[in-house]
Amino acid sequence: MQIVLVEDNPLMQQLFAIFLRGHGFEVTVAATGAAALATHVSLPALFMIDLRLPDCDGFELLQQLRVHPTLRQCPAIALSGLGEGDRRAAMAAGFDRFLTKPTDLDELLQTITELIGDNPPR
Image 1: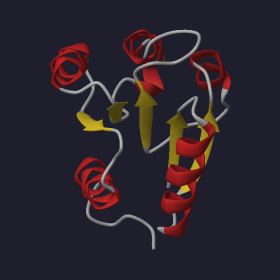
Image 2 (image 1 turned 90 degrees about the vertical axis):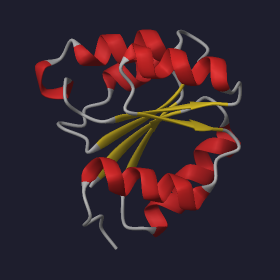
Image 3 (image 1 turned 180 degrees about the vertical axis):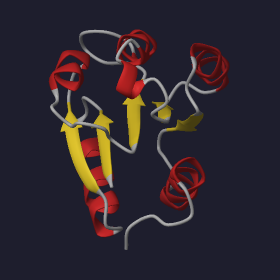
């Protein structure tokens, strides 16, 4: 299953990608909103989007992704280090879940499983 990770911090990119690949997921990493929009993943299982990107915020990016008919129903997790204010805004913007950074990796895996089903790759 394909996950698109939109994160500008190289350390966080590595952490998430290594963890997710270790659990059998394919991971495409984009460091900007523009790069995420340019990815040629036909239908990812999930988006993980940092809310603070160098070229846009995650709220704008989610709106742009939702314009594409094939991506309207694709689950999206918001990632932020700023806490509860971002949680409320992310859920209101249409994100399916919100996780704070630093992210508990067990919670991340549980959240992904809840969003894409009980049979993630192993």
